[in-house]
Image (cartoon, rainbow, N blue to C red; front, side, top):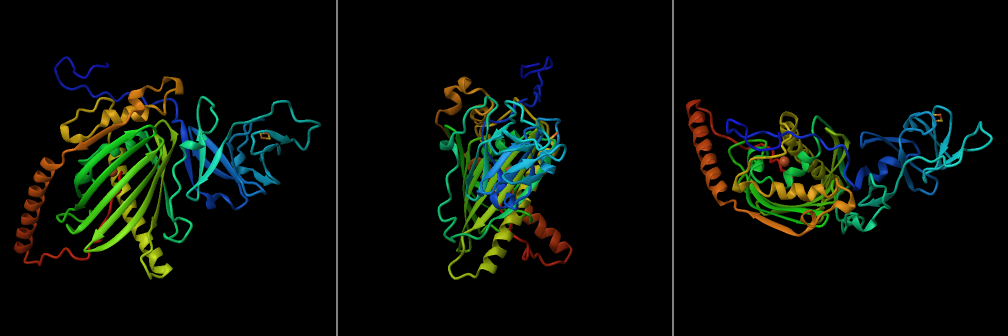
Length: 398
Ligand code: FES
Ligand SMILES: [Fe+2]
């Protein structure tokens, strides 16, 4: 059924079918340093796996993980010279995808070539270009370099990886426009919320403050957050966050990136750097970085819990305060069609500001009622109301 109404007039829930292809574009495989130990590394991606290794010039190479001879698992092979050697019969594959040597054979078969992926390093992370149509990598579409990253402005990366099973990665993308879930799932008031989509970029601008009635959120009304989060292509988001807690201001950069591992699974990675406050020693700064990473980690887990239990919806039923879900999905669609089939409505500039007044009016009242009830309960139990000590948790543009 493709319509939205059933014969009884109730709304039809169209779960659709997960796409059978993966997004064209640059995909981040994680921090570069993870791959520079001279060993082969396995990265699940696009329904299979990739092998990543470093050659003697320091460059990182990425091939399909399965050997074209008899299907051996190259990620369990060895790096020999500049090549990856298959554990099954020792065929040697170069970073250009060509079979360079078969030690036991007189000659290498003509056109012995496997799938290779063009690589790039940005922000100390490894990227690969993926396109089912086989186009050449487009370096102009790489995300921007973070200014100040190499000059010591920030703490070192805290980098985390989560395997998500049972969800298509579009669930993660949908959050770009989802104003209301920040209150219900991430326990904050989004006081200002705007989206801009253009070309390969989709941005969310948000301002928020904490909910004082629940722990696990910001925990304090005095915790203000300004967030600007941009997807550069289908899977790599840079989220600039400026926090203000009683005048103590911090700049945090959060990377939120994912790679589809199957039609309903993906690997989520997020990395955090925090601007080092003037005069703070490295150890304390690293501690603060880890603290923020824990907080954002909590935020992602709040989303993950929802994704795990929800179903996909092709035809969401929306209210005015929901943000431009359909427009965002059209933007996202550009990465799943052939380049020749990209239409202007996928890439034209689109701007939308969600009116958050009505929502915040209601939420303020709800929170006030919750606080009043809590105070009553506390009084009844003759326990002093004491919300101190709760860690303020932050959330990101997701
Ligand atoms: S399967 Fe890889 S060398 Fe035979
Ligand atoms: Fe979220």
